[in-house]
Amino acid sequence: MKRLALPLLAAVLAGPAYGQALPSAPAPALTCGPFKAESSKTGATSRWTISGPSGKTTETGVLRSGPRFECVDSAVLVVEFTSTAGHSLFTAYFPDGTDIGYGRQQIDHRGTRFILPIQAKARIAPAFRAAFDYHCRLDMPADPISPAMRAECLF
Image 1 (spheres, rainbow, N blue to C red):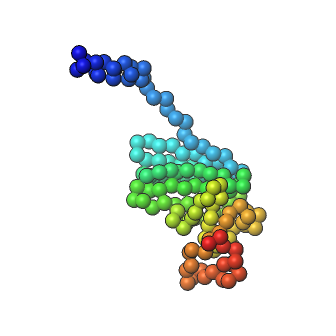
Image 2: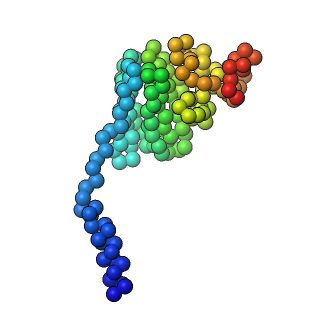
């Protein structure tokens, strides 16, 4: 009787799901200021499209995670993903058509705020600089951090 009870119990518990197709999830999408971001996945391949003031770009890749979209200050689109090789990338798209990109290990995320290398601040339009915080960990000879810049760093 015990040998029959366990398979019978498993069949009863699994019964409602057996034979039912799982609902397909809609492709993730986000509208952020002038941007529209959409992604889809077919098999192992992810595809994402960013439409904005500079036009439309589409990328594809086999990813470990992402792409993940986030809207900063109701105008800046952030896209993050990690490739299957383990390379994590962060790109922020700005309404003026510029974008900045870093390896994810160069970016921190605390609460709802992104913390970028202080060198990024000069590359961001003044209207959006306050939307981010900055750190001084990325000290490069070709892009040095001045004492005045260091005063603006969280760490």
